[in-house]
Amino acid sequence: MSTELRRLRNYIDGEFRDAADGRTTEVVNPATGEAYATAPLSGQADVDAAMEAAARAFPAWRDTTPAERQKALLKIADAFEERAEDLIAAEVENTGKPTGLTRSEEIPPMVDQIRFFAGAARLLEGRSAGEYMEGMTSIVRREPVGVCAQVAPWNYPMMMAVWKFAPAIAAGNTVVLKPSDTTPASTVLMADIIGSILPEGVFNVVCGDRDTGRLMVEHDTPAMASITGSVRAGMSVAESASKDLKRVHLELGGKAPVVVFEDTDIAKAVEDISVAGFFNAGQDCTAATRVLVQASIHDEFVAALAKAASETKTGQPDDEDVLYGPLNNPNQLKQVSGFIERLPAHAKVEAGGQQVGEKGYFYAPTVVSGLKQDDEIIQNEVFGPVITVQSFADEDQAVAWANGVEYALASSVWTKDHARAMRMSKKLDFGCVWINTHIPLVAEMPHGGFKKSGYGKDLSAYGFEDYTRIKHVMTSLGE
Image (cartoon, rainbow, N blue to C red):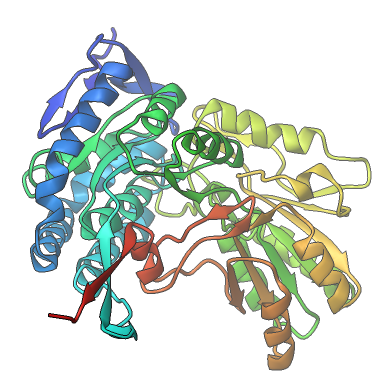
């Protein structure tokens, strides 16, 4: 007996719609490996309709006061809290994440982030007016950029959608947002909630695949393209946007170094690092998955980390004892497995290293030691529950190896020596440096990287300002 699949739809100009040509794609629950819904496979006509709606809505939304935009965003935050259980259910079906952790670790920061940007809407900072030329007064205006084409990833579908639409809408822009083709359910539900609060056309959702995203970025209408995704996807977006000089905001991959010095409390460090490495199945650009340990404590640290991995549990969403759920899709499972299968002879799998469970895309918590700086698994992002460990001799070598990758999003330093921590925070070439912790984020502080991790900031006033443009206005004081 076949089960009828739920039908998800695009949200364009205040109404839900199927793809213009009727095409759909199946959406699979990664915890079961079974399809539970269909979503539109949107094409040019759908993208055109969404962009036209956003463009029509932009002048009126641009001209609303910051107080009006703040009020709308605060209503959205309240509505998300009221519909929290519905959002959690959609996200769990999207991703297979543990239900309890989704409730405690995603809903509260999402709501807080929306409220932060609601406040930011009323605090657009600029240089004060002044006379920089005799007889002339200059002022600086901050204005919204226009229509924003936004592409969200599958690792945190709800939260990354918030990181996209909240600052853009707070600044007075209108949005066309595309969720990942594997995780559209929670974003479509968000549209249902937001649709009763924002004017038609301010917030639009278009479901689809990479081609849909490409059509959005290449479209003539958007003034800005924002994507959270892989380096390859970011480079493609930057290339496409360059053809008409769109502004681009990129939050891409990471390979965060976790530098552990010999004076560290090993037990505490292992406890925190294992959680920061395995949480969300390691599917996090900032995950603590590349550990560099000073040689004098290497063996002790590896043994403790392997033990922590063996005690870490993955499983179905309703199991309250699990730290993380499945990998998102079969391709991601294949990618993670491939890294382990291709390990060089000098590497040693200390824990895990295999798929687990009879259904879904689950992978065991894995620790690999004995690695060299130029090994594939050190240089490339695994995006799975795999923590690698290298042994370094001194501070200079730690810095060289930490910085010796193409990514530059996040990092952490573990030491009781304050001066060393300050030196390392200066030398580490990453957009974020945590000291004796790894992975906490707050709405008030910027998140974003350098090098192939992209450019632009999420969260904070810096992230808000990314969705504005600066205009100089000069007026004569003469009669």
